[in-house]
Image 1 (tube, helix red, strand yellow):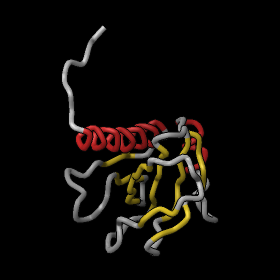
Image 2 (tube, helix red, strand yellow):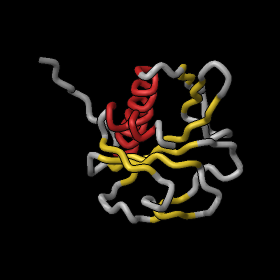
Image 3 (tube, helix red, strand yellow):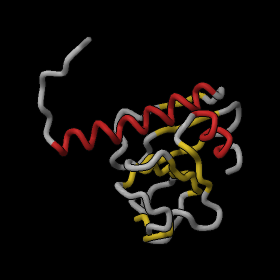
Length: 131
């Protein structure tokens, strides 16, 4: 069995975990037939993924929170960017929310119109189809 012999900084580990959520969403959407495009850099446009069907493109931002509180207020970190949907994952729970990108500075995670999913591909895709 492989053994990881390196120690990585906490900040680096946090970036690895965030990227893993982006990879999960990309994988789940690809398995559902979406074409998934991954920008080489997303700092200016705040776009983690772009998904496409035959006629439409949608920009997605993927976020994670260190909370198990579904009523927590989450911050809009994509202000000024054209984002269509945001996917939030709980790093301490097995759930997340899919929502249209909101314009307010903060919004409750479980607000009306935000769709909860269990962190499993079947549940995520079922929730994504409701958006």
